[in-house]
Length: 310
Image (cartoon, rainbow, N blue to C red):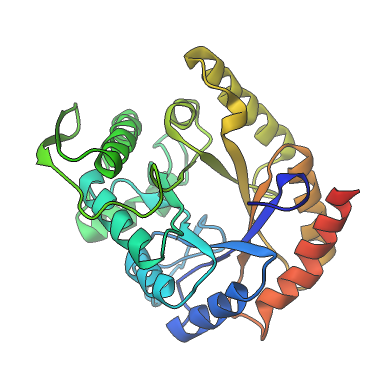
């Protein structure tokens, strides 16, 4: 997977305040363009906009449940790798997530990239109460403490991988207790679908080092290149501590593209590639222009790949 320098490009469509037919149109178009290798949705139960850092003030617009929508799109595409960027581990228990993921991988013919994250921000982040709590409170989902949520994510990664590779097992963890759990059918991909974990916190990066095939971050301009390089160095340190080659983990970043200023988006992409991020996700703002996937290819992907090649 990937073009010059191992770089790959994907798109992300935010399934809020937009119609299903519009999302399907964009994914079907992207499915016919080889330069676009992967496509993503997000996993929120209340409307959020942009790259997931702002709530719709009214909280009243339409938003589609991520895994249900992903299943529909998997059945109506043939080539794109696909996933949620990323699944909120607090919303569904890991054994249920493993079962859902295996089913989608079968429907997709082995194209699932399994995105997973803690879900929201730690309480010390001033955005937490306004960006995360309303979603959890509205649906009666306990969010607990941040350390507990990170520990639960680590257990989830273990459970999901074991369900995809073992016949039946018990699990006695601090946050999850399972007896006789099994997953049949298994995912098509062997040994299992790639696991993408998002997050930049030091504790989360320990989980990334232990379990992830792909590490995802919010790119420019939300986070600076200097910050992302520093976080990447922390991930390398965690890998060294457990004896894992950090080169086994693909660095991934998502950016919200500008239809009005593609040159700025291209500059951000070049900076990210220069910092070692080679799995790039273009967040396409709605409403989607006609042939937006072709626009992204011609204005962003192809020019960037041409520069990487030289």
